[in-house]
Amino acid sequence: MKVAYLMNTYPLPSTTFIRREIEALEHLGCRIRRYAIRAWPQALVDPRDRAEATATHYLLTRNLAGLLAAALLEAGLNPLGLARSLRPWMRLARAARNGWVRPVAYLLQAAYLRRRAAAEGIDHIHVHFATNAATVAMLARRMGGPSYSFTTHGPDEFEAPERFGFAEKIAHAQFVVAISEYCRDRLAGLARPEDAAKIRVARCGLALEEFAPPQPPRADNRTFVCVGRLCPAKAQAAIPAAVAALRWRYPDLKVILIGDGESRAEVEAACRRHDVADRVILHGWASNAEVRDRIAASRALLLPSLAEGLPVVIMEAFALGRPVVSTRVAGIPELLDDSCGWLIPPGDVRALMRAMESALSAAPDALAARGAVGRERVERLHDRRLLAGTLIGLFREADAKNRAALAGRRAAGRLPAAELLDTP
Image (cartoon, rainbow, N blue to C red; front, side, top):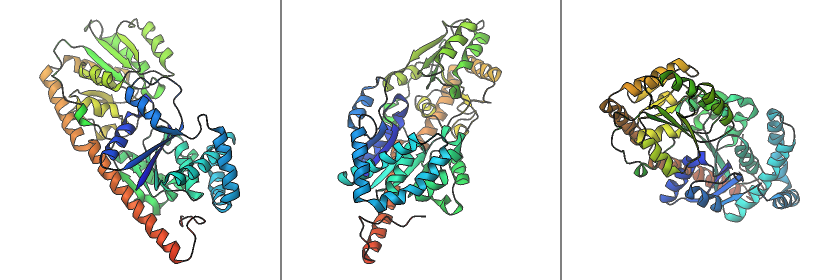
């Protein structure tokens, strides 16, 4: 079975978990072709991400001629398939409410993807996130392309779910992956009742061999690390106020922010306003190895998010034996509790300050005990080998269904190239 992965933008610093997933599948013998709609426009820091970019085929980036040619060929050689894609395309375009330029682009990309997948012998396409790329995979399927599935993470997908056509995408998918029980419950509420059984939980995984637990933090270690895109949902702009409230008691307190994004100016302004620019350090993006080193050298991970799915960086901190301060949102409480960190209400700066103070005053052995609980938890739930095994099983189920349906069409005298599998 030959599987393709399709992403919206890939690779980028926040998609390390997808790369790890693909690597684990390939280790089990699954052949993976990487597709993405567009390339990340900034320089990639991690060398493994740069290698992934070289191995990825882009549908939209520098490919206008290919898109137009594919659409013309589909219109001439596969008019039935193109026609079958138009009704769901119209429904999704109306639901998105963002004009017609992007929906037309999705249709062109779907035509190109269908033809590319046929030329490369792709049996199944798996998508990460239920947004643009899932739309393209579904339309390609309706045109006669491979079956597809997708993984949903949140939180962006659930902010205005009616705009993403979840019910339609789930109906035509072979299966859907949720990264947490919370995510599965949200998806089940968006799917048709008869499609709820398609939703499976498969938790994101780490390459645990890259995360040997270091020594416990020293008593004089007063450094927190916060990793993630600088954006309103991650709420890094709340950190300077908490640091300012603690700086007199802990004059050597520091918070290192790894990442960048649209909230950088807001975070810098908050640092100046609270006079903590020398204590809240904006590091920018870093390689995977440097992120691991920074977390290992910290006292604890700090993640005061207002909205999340289930952050992989929490898993990374636990794998390195570090406790975590984070918020009670989405899937985070499924991994983090008081035995391995501090769980606080989102948007509560006072609670954030109190949790940081508790971490700062905890003895090294108490911090190590919390970190050990976290390490055991990720070993049990978030080993990428477990994830890859689950996905391989789901891909095989999809392949068996495809083969059975193909055999049925052949027995009925229907030409596989001209007909789609019967779908809802």
